[in-house]
Image: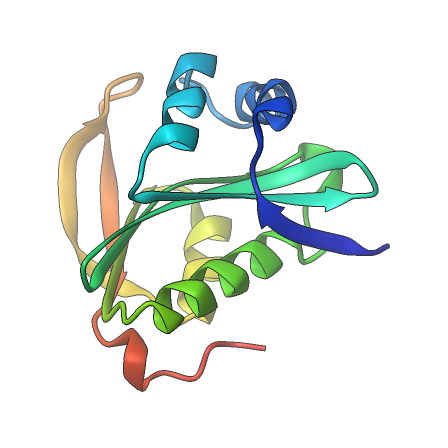
Length: 154
């Protein structure tokens, strides 16, 4: 299984929307993903096996800070290292652009995602109370405070 990571394209959006819909209780809209493709700050990545989009990651980079806005892998392709590949690619790209601090939010009860982020050096930084409007659930803010001094997990 060869997984390729690259920039998302317009033709990938329907597949991304489908993965998003199958992954989250309150999915982003097609319009939101199309907007990300046009943003000068967003670096929108897809993971593909052959021509099939199997995952995606969106990271915003502004000056020396980055924020991972969204990451998901198609349910039938989870636990195959695709999320790790996306994360590694995004962090290596951010590091090459001089990013020092990387943050993200994750549901407090999403332990598998938190474990993935910890593997790459993310640590809890705080809580955003009631962040997820669908359930009122809190978000755990996780971050890397000095990406430049880190070795990225292999």
